[in-house]
Image (cartoon, rainbow, N blue to C red; front, side, top):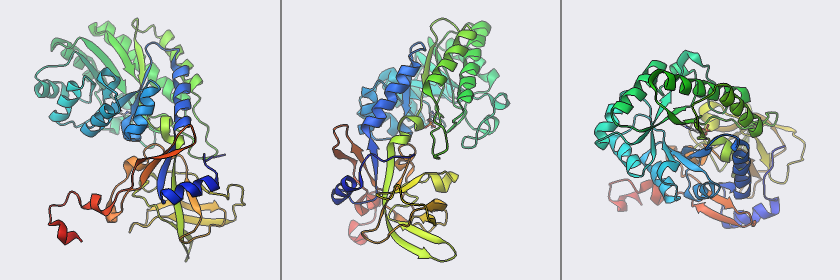
Amino acid sequence: MKTFPLSKARLGKVIEKYPTPFYLYDEFGIRENVKRIRKAFSCLPAYKEHFAVKALPNPSILRILADEGCGADCASLTELLLADMAGISGEDVMFSSNETPAEEYRKAVDLGAVVNLDDFSHIEFLERACGKIPEIVSCRYNPGPLKTGNAIIGRPEEAKYGFTRPQIIEGFARLREKGAKRFALHTMVASNELNVDYHIETARMLFALAVEIKERIGVHLEFVNLGGGVGIPYKPEDRAVDYETLAHGVRKAYDELAVPAGLGVRTEWGRTVTGPFGWLVARALHRKSIYREYIGLDACMADLMRPGLYGAYHHITVAGKEDAPLTELYDVVGGLCENNDKFAIQRKLPKIDVGEDGDIVIVHDAGAHGRAMGFNYNGKLRCGELLLKPDGSVVQIRRAETAADYFATLTVNQSLAR
Ligand SMILES: *Cc1c(COP(=O)(O)O)cnc(C)c1O
């Protein structure tokens, strides 16, 4: 059963102040979730979660996560600045970027972030960019055919990320020669994976590699970072990953492999941290009956790209009709001139009333990789973001874009744009 934290009446009040479409995030839900994660993983040494900023790049949210003890995982200059804005600094920031410009490495090193190199050749690139190799460096491992991937991220041997196994061992030796003193190992081989064993096996793989690196070249790793990729139950029949089971499985692998003393464990999860605690709220404007029945929303793929991009499932409910019988079969669509702008295809839903005072449609599990993936195609303006506070109040944490925002980067005489 998918829930939404506001009653229809309360939601109506919010909409009077902030017209649809918008994202709503539940602060209490996010905080409780992080507490559960940290409690489960407290069985591992020096555990730290570095929230993947790309999943929900809003400093108001990052500040909440920082308050709950999270660091950040960044992959671009602006993500580094967002983490900084939220007061996440120094080694609480991992910089897991790829195809990185020199300027961004310099910024990461200036901020004291842990740079996570994506390739062997980036050792020299980083050294040239910064004038020297930082004291602490992490390297990202791509196990290639040694590990199977999953649908969103693909097979590791076809993925652009990381060092091969021989490269990573040589890479740590090279980094030590160049003056690095502290080392970490990272991988990210799955996305939206609900299978607990998959994540435990990933941890086991990293622990085994940490042991091998110590034995072969005497480099002692300070921590391994298991990356992101923990799935969330988008479909009502999916089962959420149980954090306790996962953490205990990782602990068991840790003990079985007799890893070098003190090896810390970190994660850089995004989706599972905020995904279930965000909703896209939109109004049903139009209904058309042609070869299929269509419900047209005031939100579109520019607000939430996942269904169009990956064919991803997002559960949909209608405010006040949560218990109504699912008598209709609709395609729920947005207004882009792109036929894949569909939030749901042939979905059983209750009868939806449309118009300027039409039903409010709620798209669930949009709290990660939702607003963040938005874009401006067709001149569509991305919607704003609201935060439901633990005291029940609702505050705006990002306003909706305006036409002026859209035109702000143009160099033409602004009077022509009227
Ligand atoms: C996207 C990403 C994450 C977060 O992934 P989730 O699926 O949101 O948990 C973490 N680390 C890296 C390097 C990523 O690219």
